[in-house]
Length: 236
Image (cartoon, rainbow, N blue to C red; front, top):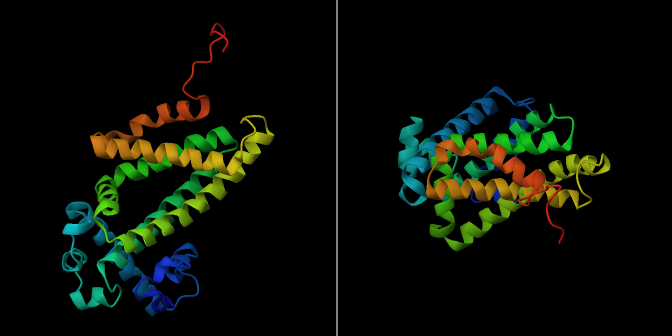
């Protein structure tokens, strides 16, 4: 039941039925449940705009309700607090980019193509949501410590899913002789880390509208490292 996911901090533990329903294309849901799910998505879309425009501290549930064109009481029937709404939006974003990543990887035959596809998907995703991710970065410094800690746990859990997905692809790359024999799951996290910190740098110091311009550079750094590999390079 969709209603089973409402309530304080519902998504800080097991993944909500709400997101499982999204992944299954709403199969098995009643008409009423589908309508509630659609409203919830509308609220999340409105919340992304409001958090992006005003930051976490400046955003209010009243403003989200106005943006979604819902009565304030309707919004409160779905989310008990701004922190709960923000955390579920982060979860929603993870689901979105994970779906995009899986779709992109389905077209890639080897580990090198996988790395390039992941970099492209994540940079396009961050670029299209630059204002929201600036708000998310600021939240780490301004949110209540216990809420920030819960959200950090959620993020690490979801990153683990990406690590597993990429680890399987990179393990094949190691077997094929494309990648060196490092821990495959670590190579997945390393790739995500490079993309993340590049995006943080661009979001913080400008140029967020050109995030995807760095895709080739990140591919070179990840796949080749930062040292020249020249035949005439002196031996160490």
